[in-house]
Amino acid sequence: MNNKTLAILKPDCVRKNLIGQVISKINEAGFKIKAMKMVHLTKESAGGFYEVHKERPFFNDLIAYMTSGPCVPIALEKDNAVEDFRSLIGATDPSKAAEGTIRKLYAESIEQNIVHGSDSDENAVKEIAHFFSRKELLENYSD
Ligand code: CMP
Image 1 (cartoon, rainbow, N blue to C red):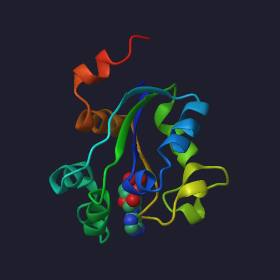
Image 2 (cartoon, protein in one colour):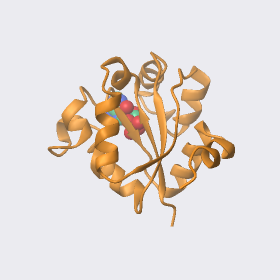
Image 3 (tube, protein in one colour):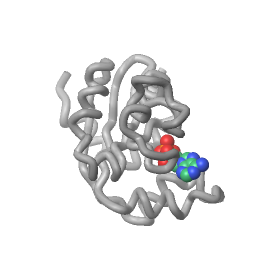
Image 4 (cartoon, rainbow, N blue to C red):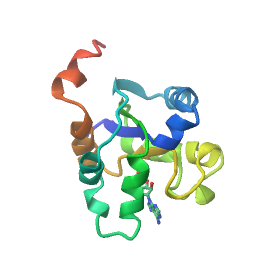
């Protein structure tokens, strides 16, 4: 079983100076950071990452938002990582997210929802590869 997932601290998280608080929640929940960087996505990169949503009515707005400022992709490791991370962040729409979840605490809207989490093990592998080379994943952690 894959024990990794990809988180992205989105541009609204960076703009609101919430990087530290969100990473604390992630660490407190038992996730180990395997790789992390700050990047300002191009339209091409954001469009490729969210290709699965390209026919959705919100796609253009989503790409505009994700390219509006820097974001912080993070490769995370934990047993049952994908499911546990989705529980930690809560529902896509923060008004429907459970109390105590990251989106309930910090997100403003269904689009500007602070953080992304992979939705399956298969996508986690692809999404981590979108942002991190094998070298970056292997070299930065000796544990
Ligand atoms: P994320 O988990 O990164 O996956 C796709 C993103 O599209 C989602 O978070 C939101 O930022 C955005 N999104 C999903 N559904 C909607 C919607 N109905 N309206 C606007 N944005 C959405």
